[in-house]
Structure formats: C-alpha cells, structure tokens
Amino acid sequence: MTNQELISLFEHIRYQIVVFPKDTTSPLPQSVGSGFMLDYKGLTFFVTADHVVNTHDNGVRKIKDNMIAISTNIPVIEDERLQTMMIPIGGFYFFNQLKVDVDKGTIDNMPLFDAAFSILQDWQINTECITCEVKIEGANVSIGEKKFHIKDTDIISANNEDVYSVFGRVRFSLVEINGTVVLNSQQTFKTGLKLVGEDDSQNYYILQYPDEVIYEDWAGLSGSAVLNQDGKIIGIACSVSTSGNRWVWVKKIQRVLPLMDAAILENNNNISII
Image 1 (tube, rainbow, N blue to C red):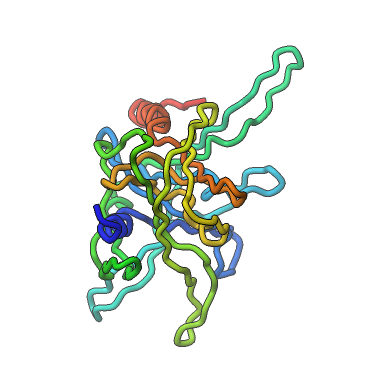
Image 2 (cartoon, rainbow, N blue to C red):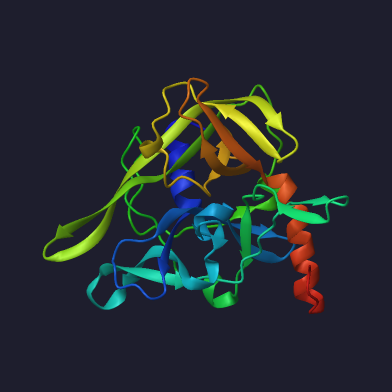
C-alpha cells in the first residue's frame, strides 16, 4: 500500500476514545486515546490500551468512576448535517500480572499488561460510525464514509523487513467555533517504524521511529492499531521513549488473543474468570 492508502485504511478502522469522570461537567476529557474493532471467532471486540480507559489516582484504579465512550460522527438525515455521538462502552477485561513471593507471603502488582478489550453488543456494533475528513500526506478521505472492522485474518507477527505505521489524533484542546466549545485535535501519521527488538517478559514489540520523538505528537495514539505496509496488524500502540533511542512499545496482538479466548469462554458459559 502507498502511504495515502494506509492513511485511508487507518481512518476507516480507527475509533476515538474519550474518558470523562462521571461527576464532572467539564467538556475536556480526563483521557483520550484510540481503539479499533476486531472480529474474532464470531464476536466483535473493541480493543485499546489499558491505560487509555483505566485512569489512575495514586495507583488506585478509577475505572468505575469514569464514563468511557467512542466519539464518532453520525449523519443527521433530516437536514444533511453531522453531529458527534458518544457511544458508551463498558465491560472491559483488564489483565494485571502478579508477582507472588511465597517466603514473604506477599503479592505485588507488576506492570499492567496494557491491553484492554470489551465484547460489543449488537447496538454498539450497528451504530453507524463514519470517517472524518483526512487530508494529510496526500491522502484524501471524505467525511461520512462508513467505518469497518479489522479481521482476525489480518493479524501477523512483526519481522525485520516490514515497515510499520500508526495514525490518529493528537494535541487535544478546547476551541470555540460559532459560539460552541468543541474538542479540537490534529491528525498525525507516523511511519517508517522498524522492529529492533522484543520484550518477551511483557509481550511487547520494540519499534524504532526514524525521527525525533516528541511526546505531544504521540499522546492520543495509545490504543491504535499498528499496521505494516500491507495493512496487516501486529499490535497495539502503548508508549514511546523520548530519549535518543526513539523506541515505540507495541503490545503483541497475538498475545491478546488467548485472553479473548478466555473472555469468550466466560461469555458463552456464564462463568467468572479470576
């Protein structure tokens, strides 16, 4: 695929996540990020990074105090305009890793697995999410085109030959347009990433970006699908290093699939996973 074709694909599979505290009236989200819908074994999963939807306060999870939603445009047929719709989403599966010290009798939280997903209900799947206008890097995506899902047949392992890319929105701010305060952001396309290593203990691919990594130009891309030049997915964008190594950590999507299998088992048999 050309860069223009990749950007078009990204816009058609990418969803914006916003997180608001339930008791707030502020129009500025507590957290923003990316996500995608993955069709796997007959179900549709909404997939993102754990830290996007699971905000913290002094190490205490605040997920139950937040409202998580997909922010999307929907057409208003009566007068041929668009409006922003928030699609509430919940029932997320989170996966901590625990370190057990038998001698001391302690259990410590290890770093988060940093992948989270929810099994979507039919009304969420069937909501008509549509694209925003995209005109960067020569791409030309029109507003109003219907979005679609990533298929499990598009999942691959990373290798040293492929080039990887991420697309999304960053630099969020509130602006006033025609008397209405809206959440504004900038589109960005990061490409040229190459595999330089793997962190097997945490199930990450380590990619290297060819240019300087400026945090503000990446914040908001967490949870995005990471695709190769053929539009195949290797994982979930999780974090970046602003030091000289210019590393990008990507959670391996293949390591998330067994957790989805466990969720399917729970969903089909009405049992609880502990």
